[in-house]
Length: 115
Image (cartoon, rainbow, N blue to C red; front, side):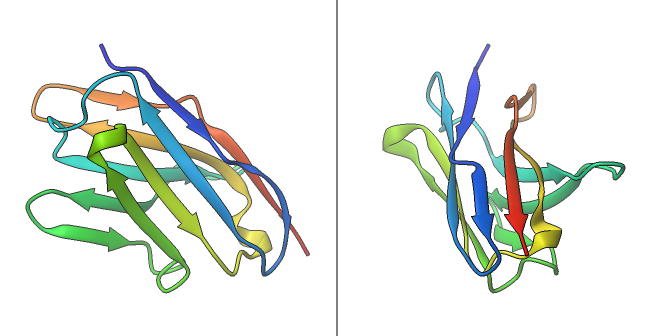
């Protein structure tokens, strides 16, 4: 079992930046898909960004050019750098790690962007 702990959320004004972190309790080498999802009130959870070991990164159209996903295998941590934040980015953000056998989710971290 792998535990994922997100951090870095908070309240920020529109145009500001935040960096989310997702720390795993063990090695992340095994995971071929690692990503960030978000869920706003009354909406379905959606994919924001992901790293696929075989094909690179991909982003939701709404965050392209503003968000950057990265991983640090030595620190067993996934990051999401969020710049030029907009009020519509307000949501709970979840990290997700997957391999052929398992899927793990973090508990979520709240991001609130004020206008």
